[in-house]
Image (cartoon, rainbow, N blue to C red; front, side):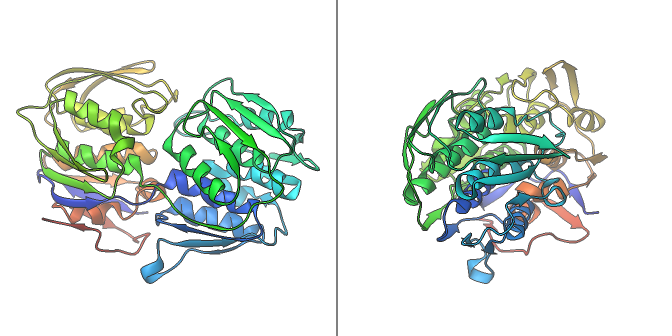
Length: 434
């Protein structure tokens, strides 16, 4: 099992480039189910979840080419034949995005059999909102033997009002609605950039969608969709992670190939904490140390608020800030599993329900720590970058699910980080020191 060995103390200096958004790529790959024509997606990150999605689509009869060499970030998908519209448990058990094939399979094939998502380390992500929406659109859904089976001769447009904001629910039902008969109105929708990314691809495929990126989305169903070429947006969470990496190490780091519009909440909070941020272009932002790092509170919210996927990384930064930071987690009920590992490194953190109080600055010392989920893993890397001595991070396969060549990018800007074990993805020069 792979580990990271990290020696702290080096400020990160140089330019680091952001990969495509994994959380956009996954629903966009699922959208290929909706057409017999070929879909080509550019800027696909080379991460483990993408490979899992490829295996899932291939198991249904699709042809999926992830690309190699100079085309390694291009994926071509043909779902002309869907011989087995089943999302098998043995494939999807490691990836929560499996539910995203439910809507498009019912819309295209008239039936779907999808393994129920199990427990998630950071908390429940119930699929009941997906089911409720599809039933309103005319699908018949039964649950047995750990699978959901949905059937519909053709879905019908409906008025869908989400009880709570759900990103995957919005995406799944949006894909179902584009081939439904009539108009579908979706209210209380997720406004995340990943939803807008999916909608833009669907529109390029011939869908009629209005309001993506707002709380109300209107869809006029069409009888068929066609092929398209589409470029996935940059990963805003990866970009935010690197901004905090530059800030916590008091380096001079330029984050390129990002979308600064998607980073507003993170940039605003870093500025409040005393970090110097320069937006050099719509896709380039520079982070430099201010006079001192100051405590600042955060409260995670749906987009455009501070993202839950950045909470753990910000907590690592808060351990180095002067004063007391209050961190409230409003999205997932169990997203403080990194706290005990940070405490083992010397952090002063107290948890009370969904709130954590961080007192800083703390003199972190190297330790052997355990990664529990994707973003918790990133927070431990950030802490190790400023800890005294050599830290060992176990179970870094969590990182490989969502960060492309993470250690290679950090090495390119001065971090002393090495992987022990097999490297998941091929290395590529995508981070260079100025």
